Length: 434
Ligand SMILES: Cc1cc2nc3c(=O)[nH]c(=O)nc-3n(C[C@H](O)[C@H](O)[C@H](O)COP(=O)(O)OP(=O)(O)OC[C@H]3O[C@@H](n4cnc5c(N)ncnc54)[C@H](O)[C@@H]3O)c2cc1C
Image (cartoon, rainbow, N blue to C red; front, side, top):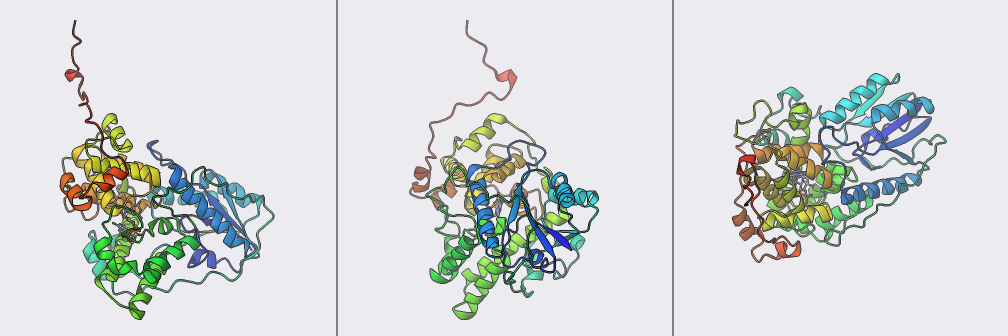
């Protein structure tokens, strides 16, 4: 049987159940398709740093596969348009991939299935647990994080799978090396895509430098690599799996010490898990301004282009927000605290529709993950799962607390000359002086 495995956010050999299940094929074609923009606005696409990280992840995958006599065919275009042709051209008998939680990605998969005459197998592989492990059906998923956490935190996290020792040979295809990205990593966040680099960061954070022991205190630090694990870019692209991270932490706890900080990292992985399952449950509601059941807040559904442009370019009246946005565009990174502050500013100070903020994050974040990004934005705007009324951060207080000497603002040139008030209504337009 000739099989095709379609890589999505699982760009790794180790702990990849979908890939490991392809071992019995007589021939195996591995394919990756560059992501396609979301349909409703053009603020998405990919920022230069996000694209760089993805290209590096693909190059690293190609290198790891070449040691097994394999390669991955990297193509562009919509999966439901491209894959049927590939299936025909190579005489494929079965297609497999790993589940992604986004509504549009699953819709694409459904259309693809309807256009293929061969079976499509969908594996679970980017979460700590599978649907079968969970103590509730998908439609009974808790709406709030705490009951979810309490129900799953005692479950045994399955051990990560070893990489396959061999893979079936590829068909004769025109494989090409993924072109290098046009930009280099920013010196402020010199991280590169690929499993090897993700595993190295995991070892460094947990075992070698034991930064994990200080994680609870340092996780709100605004600069990458200083405080939190910075593992999310690899988790989002699939260079490492959440089970690898959880097992490293559990191994550390068993062999060295278990602290509140080690527990906290596992706790954060459960947030990732929660948003994944919520995205599957919520379907298209994940992208609604006010999903049904969300708290009825008086939210603007506006696209005020000048305020939005100022937020995106880091030229608002809030130096800390400016610095954060400049950091994001330059490096593809923003800390969790930074994301909360910038998002709160967009929703509360600028009164904009949260989805525009989420789309801009989608464009630039190295670790863009549809469930975590849109789920966190909804949470912050007070409209999604666990809608505890949203979060309104006092920006001045946040600056005092997280950047007391203004070093972060200075580093990213967040201080701007005062901006002129914009005319927001035609009735306000000044009458020209004669
Ligand atoms: C508005 C907003 C948008 C976000 N968008 C994304 C996104 O697109 N992709 C993404 O991976 N995370 C997103 N997050 C969650 C969080 O900010 C990042 O996961 C975290 O900053 C990544 O840094 P780290 O790896 O050092 O995290 P650590 O603090 O070291 O945590 C370890 C891991 O736990 C998970 N995690 C931690 N916090 C969260 C959280 N709040 N929600 C879900 N998972 C979490 C991540 O996988 C992370 O790598 C967003 C948060 C906000 C407030």
